[in-house]
Image (cartoon, rainbow, N blue to C red; front, side, top):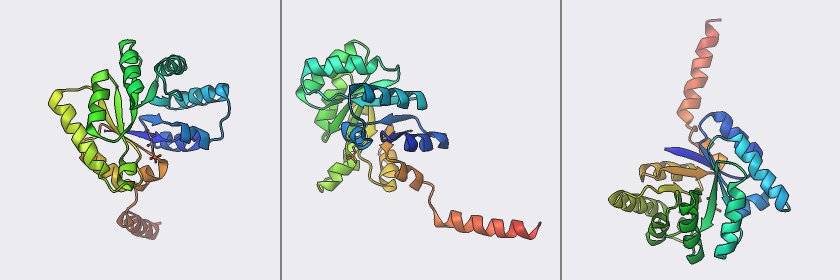
Length: 217
Ligand code: E4P
């Protein structure tokens, strides 16, 4: 079970890394824009900084929607650092790009996955990861965790090496549910990760221990 952080914010990445449990990072154009990064050179430099902070896969998403554009961007992104995984949308052109990149041994993360059929096509094309969007499915009154479980079952049946990377995590409970569903990786914002540590009985118990420890001074 691996944890990625789903942000382009360097401070949050540092906090998760310093916990000692961080296995990688996922970004997307919205998360990058949120950091007020402008211009091609700044974007490349930002990905490089992230790669230097975290020893694990770092997903960087293509902005193009056509095959040639995706492939050109993918080559440029993967040249930034050995840990870059090229994030490609689950479209017709995206599946072709994943297939071509897989043949060139460039790892990919197929993003915007909302059903099992999309996940299977991405796996057949050779994606390293597929990213079902749990929270966005829940937002649409569907069951995001059930999709994660379904994709895990199908990949097990057929022996696909592609890993299920549960994305669009909204809260701590999603993390637990995705782990139970067999997700290989969960990518989430910092707060749901920190939320895993929250329990009132831990706080209450520690307060009592500290109180009793003070009596022995
Ligand atoms: C990660 O790979 C996705 O881009 C991200 O988890 C989407 O999350 P959101 O639905 O909260 O935007």
